[in-house]
Length: 169
Image 1 (spheres, rainbow, N blue to C red):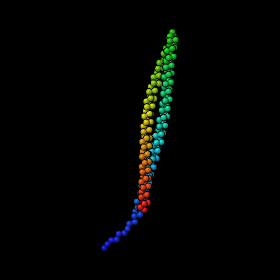
Image 2: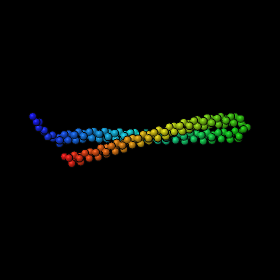
Image 3: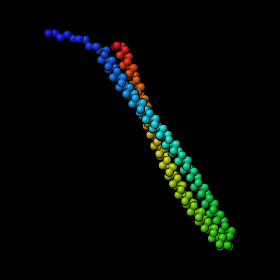
Image 4: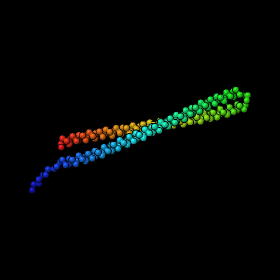
């Protein structure tokens, strides 16, 4: 007995394939959007960190200026003490007080120097942190651009398949 071949309704299977493909495209598009949003959040976090780093830099610059003022003040105090010793050499007691003031000024100058070194070290760490954050932001921007290109390629593929389906269908 010969079996009869029944024609298959290709439009139904093609419609189901196209629907499945559309759903997968939507899912990929959704994931790409989520990735873009994640990259945007990372950029915003990097911007906040850059702002905080800049604020710390401003604060460290203020500390450096204070240290410089302390150094200048210490130098002025030491010079005044030296002038006082020269002028009041006959007055031993005045000379001793001036020497103590000069010693205190040197200690303040040393503390100011140590603070300046700490400030310089902190500034360098801040700069390195800012460079790291800029690099992270650049990587996020590159990933975002790559995702945008993938989405555009997916859209182009969808357009081609739709055109192909339109011609076939």
